[in-house]
Amino acid sequence: MKVMVIVKATDSSEAGVPPTQELMNAMGEFNETLVKAGIMESGDGLKPSNQGFRVRFSGNKREVVQGPFIETNELIAGYWIWNVDSIEQAIEWVKKCPNPMLEDSDIEIRPFYSMEDYADWDTTGEIAEKEQCLRDTVTMQNSMQQATMNSYLFFSGRCEEALNYYQEHLGASISMLMRFSDSPEPLPEDALTPGFEDKVMHCEFNIANIKLFASDGCGDGTEISGFSLALTLNDPDEAHRVFNALAKNGQINMPLTETFWSPLYGQVTDQFGVAWMVMLPGEAPDTADN
Image 1 (cartoon, rainbow, N blue to C red):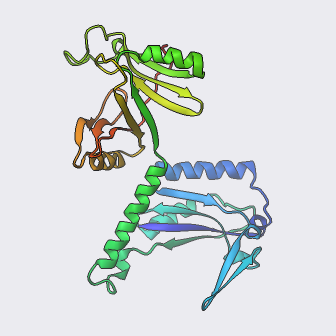
Image 2: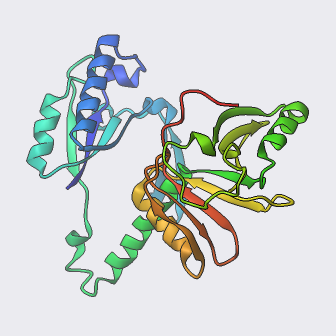
Image 3: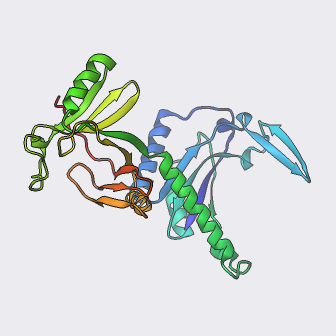
């Protein structure tokens, strides 16, 4: 059950009076408790209404009204979005909350509508299906906005030479470098071209404000063989979704699986011939070896 927990404004919040350090600490501890309990989805405080606006609707007319607004007891100073088992559970959690204001205050709990509430009007389920599609799109967009993407270069045995050149001429900085001989797990038999044991398995370096990933690859070549786009996501379900979408009519080069450097990692070439690495972030080594 999703609810909005609304902190009502008071004279002090509308006046922009900052909370005491003691109150900030108490609210921070309460928020940590909500997160650990798996209840809190989001929450924020709002600036006073003198920094807000309202748009008043009358037929086809739109009138913009700038705050402050006088109905202090009807204004909102902050909110949480919680997922709870029942309204009773939400009430019990609110009762544990420190008084969020310097004076007496109110916190209001309002359940969200769900599509089940509209079942009598949506007898075919068409509206619910469209609504779910919109929610899925918003979830995907939010996830992708938090993702990062890096170019991954393969130098076919000349990675260290290239890094040295970039350092000398482009001011490149190396943040991490691992050789095949540094691998904590044995490599598959015949995976490497003889003599590649000390070649670069993976490195990360910056040129200007761009981070690049690079490797020698597993075999020799006369020139750089191409590149992969390395896409790092924070959610396992989203990683599987993206990987499967890229693999459709494409080719899976390495299935999405757990590795020693990432909880999930896979390689895929999409139907347009673009090579991708899809992964979750892993712990970086403590020191760089270069």
